[in-house]
Amino acid sequence: MILGTAGHIDHGKTTLVRALTGVDTDRLPEEKRRGITIDLGFAPLHLDGVGQLGVVDVPGHEAFVRTMVAGATGIDLALLVIAADAGVMPQTREHLAILKLLGVRGGVVALTKRDLVDDEWLALVEEDVRATIEQSSLAGASIVPVSATTGEGLDALRAALTVAALAVPARSESDVFRLPVDRAFTVRGTGTVVTGTVWSGTLARDATVRLFPLGIVARVRGLHAHGKSVDVVRAGERAGIALAGVELDQVGRGAVLVQGDAWRSSRVMRGNLALLPDAGATLGPRSRVRFHLGTNEVGARLVVRDSVLEPGVEHSARIVLDEGIVARAGDRFVLRNASPVSTLGGGTITDPHAPIRARPWPFGTRDAAATLAILTAEAGSAGLKVQDLPIRLGIQPDMVIALLDAAGGWRVGSRFIGAAVREQLAAASLDILGAFHVEHPMEPGAPLQWLRSRLNAPDEVATALLAAISAEGRLVMEQGLVARADFAPSLTDAQRRLSTFLMDALAKAGAEPPTIEELSHQLGTEAGELLSLARWHARAGSVIAVEPNRYYTSAAVEALKAKMSMGMADGSEYAPADLRDLLGLTRKFLIPFLEYCDREGYTIRTGLGRRLTAPLA
Image (cartoon, rainbow, N blue to C red; front, side, top):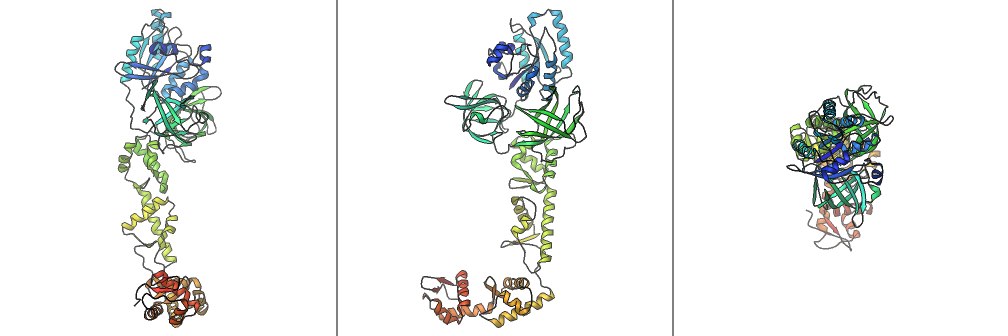
């Protein structure tokens, strides 16, 4: 579990953390010199009955609010620090707003510097604090006066933190692994080390991970949690991860370490968002903001369904980022203004991998099933990749199959297709084949690959679809061809007359038939139409294509085979000249016919000639 501090500059956050944990989180020389926290600091805190918490100490100065957002994102519990001698200040209110935007629901308020005020002043400050937090996500939180200098109230603060921590649901360890990187450095003998809070899942030593935004594949060389070497790090822990195969200049704050192939960087997302009531401005489709998610901060443009984004009103928006980042459905983000610097609002990611020209969805909260229905309809015949659903829906991997089963769609290979889309594809395939049969009535079917290429669907979807509707009896697939089940090849009256001329010409030619082109000149018809008729008869078995463009009647081929069977002794080899005399063919016809016999397995070609494989009669 992660505990994050929040509060105005110089209200004693770092001093209080040191009093609770014994760790000074101000590690940078500049922080020591100026006496303020500039970067994130980390320390372990043990609470009886809870265990070890990771404490993230964030800066309070308004110039470092973006760093505060990076630290506060992903925390489970907030420790809001307010100095008793100063009371509620501007960054107190801004930090409270950020905690609410990030969905932090549990926490404790520490009134620090208790030793500097009297009881009457303390009571006034406490009353003001309670009124301030009443409209925040910390409404009803315990308010504990404390002095880090004298130690007064520290035990009461630990007790209040324990109660608050026990009320926070534990993070699931069976989820996909993700860790936003907040620091990176090198250790001699170890290499590049990244640190951050494990947002979800678990990670083991020697596991393979991917580092975004570059997509680098790396191996986990070593793991640390709370300063100790471990074999596994878990959701809610602060972790240090040594990576093999990564250079320091390839990683920094804003990088994300993940496991699995479903994660990817995206520049277009959808989200539900709202500006703070006191944002003081409206945003149009060309307005620019700073978008904060995890340790990422990038420029962004928001497009809402209505013309403008108004303070205090929730909207659905398309979020177009200047740079791609890794996000997941359900992630919380914060919107800030670049000039003047201020927090504008924030919201929740509803679709981290939205299409480039995606329109915002109608605003509303949706469960995973409702979102799946929208995404499935939008994906159409391309389908949704099943491995992407834990990311796009923000659910755990072990929930995906039950969700798909309940949705009633169609799982094919690695994709999920909506039931309506499947039927549309099936109808389209039958329509395409129907048009093919009208245009080519003599053909037994269309080439299978030809039909697949016209279905406007991924190959695995098209292949599985045709197999499925064939099994249903709506299609017939044989030898690489596909036809409607209700189709039978047929000839028109004109084609039947031409067919008679063709067969008469081939029968008269006997063992030396003309080519299709030669026949087309003789009969005064198109070669293509004549070739289609020849293929029609070949499928029926009445003619045989000895050469690609020369057809023999089956009777002529059988007569030649009979001559070979009678004239060739078993096991004897015959040169082409011998077979020419035997068959009475010129070389123009002899060699193609012998090659046909080789292909059909009637003869075997040897170094000296050919011999029969078996009697042909």
